[in-house]
Structures are given as C-alpha cells and as structure tokens.
Length: 323
Ligand SMILES: CC(C)(COP(=O)([O-])OP(=O)([O-])OC[C@H]1O[C@@H](n2cnc3c(N)ncnc32)[C@H](O)[C@@H]1OP(=O)([O-])[O-])[C@@H](O)C(=O)NCCC(=O)NCCSC(=O)C[C@@](C)(O)CC(=O)[O-]
Image 1: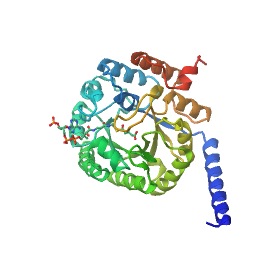
Image 2: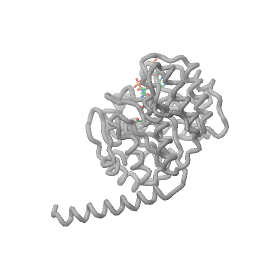
Image 3: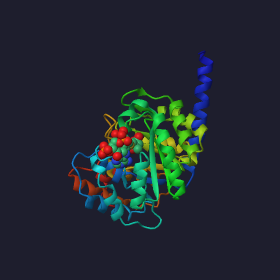
Image 4: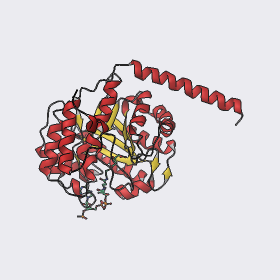
C-alpha cells in the first residue's frame, strides 16, 4: 500500500476515534451492568459450593442497585457440575421487582427446566469459532444456532426474554485469531432470531483495543449498538481498556463479575471477567451512571471471596478503604 494511503487511513481512524472519544466523555448517560458472577463467576470453580452460598450471593447482589444478575445455567450437570443445583438456586433466590435474573439455556431441554423453575429471561450462547463451540456445547457454531430456534420460539410463546452471547469474538483458544466476519454472522443470526441483546464475549481475554476496534467496526455496522453488550475477560489485563473501547462505539451494556470471578471451563486458559467493582469505579469516574452502590458491591465481593477462601481479583476492592 502506498505511504500516502496508509497515512490517510491512519488520519481517518484517528479522527473517528477522537470523535467517538469526545462522545463518550462528554455524556452523562447510563450504563447497565449485567452481573455474571453467580453464573460465569462460579461455573469454573472446581470445589462445589453449597446452593445456600450461591443464593446468599445473589440476594446480596440484589441489594447493590444492579438491575440484571445472571443467576445460574440450565446446562448438563455432567458438563458443568457447579451448575447442577440450578433449579434449587433459582427457585430460592429473592426476586426483587425491577431486577432481571437471566439464566443460560443451551437448548430446549434447558429452556424447559428454566421455565419450570420460573425464569423470565434466558440466554442462549453461540460462538464465532467452531472449535470452541464443539468443546463447549458439542456441536458446531451453525448447529448451535439451529438449537436456539426452538428456544426462541418457545420463549416467545411464554413471554420470556432472550439474550444472546457470542463467544471467542477476537480470539479462540483452539483456532487463534477470529475474523470479524465470523462474529458478524453469529450476531446477525441471533439478532434476526429475536435476541433482544447480544453480548460479545472475549472468552479468553486476549483482545486489545486494536482487535476490539477491528471487530466492533464490522459488528456495529451489522446491528444497532443499542442491541449490543460486551463481556470481557481479563486474562491479559485488557478488560477495562476493551470495555472503554466499546463505550466509544456507543455500547452501554457491560457484563462483569463481582471481584473478577469467572471463566469458561471449556476455554483453555480462560480466567476471570472484568471485576464489577473496577468497571463501576471507572464508569462513575467518567461521569457515567450505573445506579450501583460501590461500597455495598465491595462488601459482596469480600463475602464471596471469603467463602471461596481467596483474595479478590478486583483492584478497587483490594484498595478500597471506604470513601
Ligand atoms: C449443550 C450440552 C447439554 C450438549 O451436550 P451433549 O452431550 O451433546 O447433549 P445431548 O443432547 O447428547 O444429551 C446428553 C445428556 O445431557 C442431557 N442434557 C442435554 N441438554 C441438557 C440441559 N440443557 N440440561 C441438563 N441436561 C441436559 C441429556 O438429557 C442427556 O442426558 P443422559 O441421557 O446422558 O442422562 C452440553 O454440551 C452442555 O451442557 N454444555 C454446557 C457448557 C457450558 O455451560 N459452558 C459454559 C457456559 S458458556 C460461557 O461460559 C461463555 C460465556 C457465555 O460466558 C461468554 C464468553 O465468555 O465468551
């Protein structure tokens, strides 16, 4: 490519980056946090936690101002033993009016169990990579989409809202770098199928603002940003930067996990999510509202880390002396 064209392209990217940046820092709008700690945060824990601890965790999270708390997943207990108490947990949690408690459902069987337990919102989870999809749900990415169709149909009949996930949006532990076009294919399919929101998952936390931008350039052209969320794992310490990048694209829904718990058991090398405490601290510092009480959230983080017998992965939680 001639040097003048390279310079022109670089100038255009910088101009659009600056415009987007101005947009995010000058706004005082709201960001909705989807707390995934009780599901994503705990599913990878080797030691089975008592259902009572999970129920206590969710009930305490319900007191923090969060409006979406992913409670559990209706997947096979042979595949994810930690979620084997899904019905017990879901039935027992206090359902606070105004808070949604979505649960993961990989297929119609999972949806039916979730419905029987009283779920009003579910999430289907697809992937941009076949290799990961095969490891995670035992079928290709395209086959997984076909499994979701009856779920979406049944959900519509029962007035249940459906969220969608796309995993491995920038990198796969088995296939390496992922092309944005592969992400667009799955995002479009979930959007057309009727998912009200699609969460873009950097499953193994390999993304950087560079790879996130390349992906978001394509994805935000395909579906409105109002229908998108981001779900950034922090394996390489890039989660907050990647979330900031997505805010610059106008995305206003961020998944995170209290005290940075988490990881997918079928994604080699996956570690915790962005810590909710860190995300909330950053957003409030930027003048973006979340309605979350950070002090209360920090106490919940300390509670669950105490139960797990390990320090918090949240830098804010560790540094917090009360303000
Ligand atoms: C999808 C399956 C079930 C396919 O697993 P399979 O073995 O291919 O399923 P199957 O249809 O052949 O059925 C095998 C057995 O599972 C049962 N079964 C079938 N479906 C269900 C169900 N819903 N709930 C409970 N049981 C179920 C079914 O009844 C049967 O029981 P058996 O006759 O052997 O006793 C399996 O692969 C599975 O459960 N996978 C879940 C993996 C998982 O939960 N991964 C973590 C969540 S994804 C994630 O963390 C990423 C995300 C969302 O956070 C975003 C990101 O970070 O990128």
